[in-house]
Image (cartoon, rainbow, N blue to C red; front, side, top):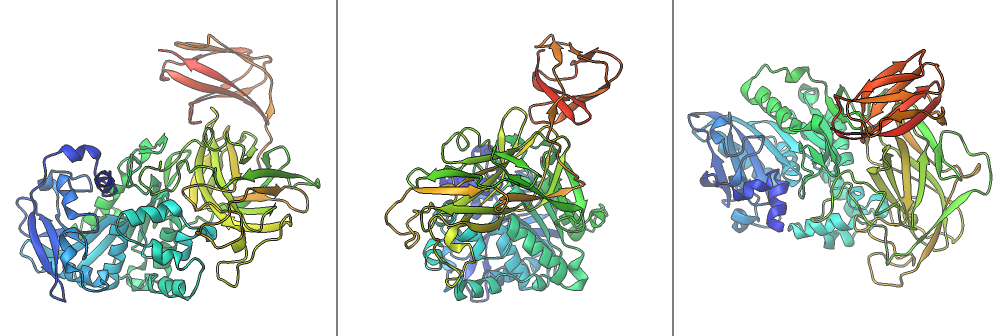
Length: 628
């Protein structure tokens, strides 16, 4: 299984496991300390001197012998570039080169300059690669090798932040376990530094250096990736701190993608979790090739005309561009929790309203999809209805069906007023997009440990007084998602999400150690003096109408083959829409001065649809089945 994981994290299709292997030139590249790194070199036939794409990997360079990335596969001769793939010092073919603590940036510098001196190289080198293969690109660029032209890191930033490993003060269990399984061995160091201390300050200062990146950078990420905030922070730094001559050359693309590494949810793949994004298939490869062609080939392909940020707006499934992220057109809108399990833009006016959940650490709320990494866990968008929302340890708050599209661009902010009968516990928020067919598709999630409610240093931490009310504030990761009209906004509140996050034992004792496991009764308040809410950054948004039923209408025949008749109770003008099961509008029609109209379904595929009628602020919806 580890071998399959490694193939996938490199972006290689599983079918490649059975393909004929490429036969690269194999060489050893000398480093400044006289150690050597193992390298595979792929040179297209007919190439005398070509630019080169360098990939530095801890996952075994030989896996790329099943096929090269960027859509090249085994057709090496179709490439305009040489590919040099190098094992990291201390890994696989370069395991014998380990000599103390490696400086991977210096190793990258030496590899780049060695490539530039080879007879098959024209002296121009770019780097490419996802995750750890992306992080090392920043380390290499920091050393400023003279022949490095540009870098293309995917789902990666150079940072090593406390918040990446301890969001809300809680260890990301599955993430750390997977990194250990891949040979990085971070858990011992992480567990020795459970609070934000001088060790973290030093590490963070050493690993954030946008001012030192002197080459054009094309960062590619995904909204379902666990590195969203890391990438956005680094890109913002590049835009404001890198040298003036390169500052406007950096670009960022954010697609509807997960991190990759296991399953189908790879960067650039059509299928992500339980959803398919046809409009984003292959964009990471095609845009990366445009980037490389522009800087390595001098291609006049319009790359420089693109704005700084290219992002995929999920829900409506369109690509957009802007000069920065988050976009400046989004404004905050608050959705308040209420006593009817609703989310409404109306501030609570009543008192004494609250909701309670019981959390047992021995039976935690399960991780279903999301920004996971661990082998065997589902990645990307997943329906929470069956495995999460059907349990008795969750509080569910849902808006009315949206009367118009709610276009979200940026991070959701959470303010909860809570209490517990224990001295420590956790609160988790999952935000979902509820489809007309009832699916509750996960968008983003985060956690807050109560002892860290005031901060993450040792001096910040304190236990809570049982049954006292506390205010907690935290953010969900940035997102671009349109809640289509007819969909609903939902938040699920639990006190666990395992194995994505460590499960709090509720005993107030030392974390990540054996101890008593206590059941907690946790309360969320939604009243006038404790108005818990979620704040969404929405574009061109005025208000959500609490939708009223406009009255009944008839559809027949239903199921329908070619024609469905819509019968109304009046001759008033109404807007008719047909939506597919994802909520996407596939047909629209204005009905005036009649109580009956025939609608052709000949262009619709067989399946389930929803017919929605609108009349001013009233809406009514019925299910339609189309046969073929």
